[in-house]
Length: 123
Image 1 (cartoon, rainbow, N blue to C red):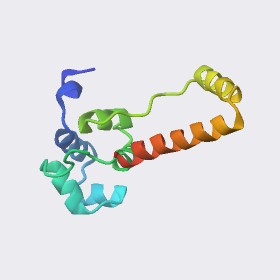
Image 2: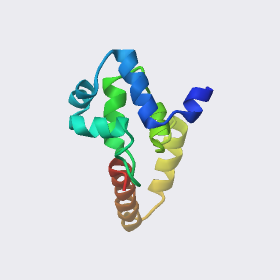
Image 3: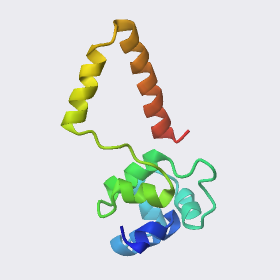
Image 4: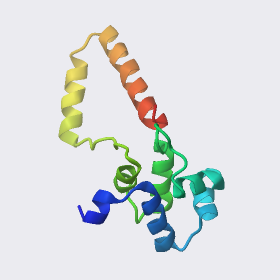
């Protein structure tokens, strides 16, 4: 990790993104489906508050501007990203899941959906 990546905040990352892609705030907003005022407030550090930039916006930025990874954008926004799931980890999780009763499986599914929703909405 470079010093820039370690200390770069979201507004600085957006400035770098605009320079890298030659786009303005309105174009960023159009590409990720948010209002131009939202991007402007990120740039001026006036939006995000306690919850920060929504995970959906982070992923949309990474998809629209692939030179910037979701991990890099998340780090600048002060967010954590979902961890990778290796085939070995997936196999272990499925084996554990298969050892649960039907009722326990339903409970774990509800719990996992709630956690995923929290990650998507940032709440």
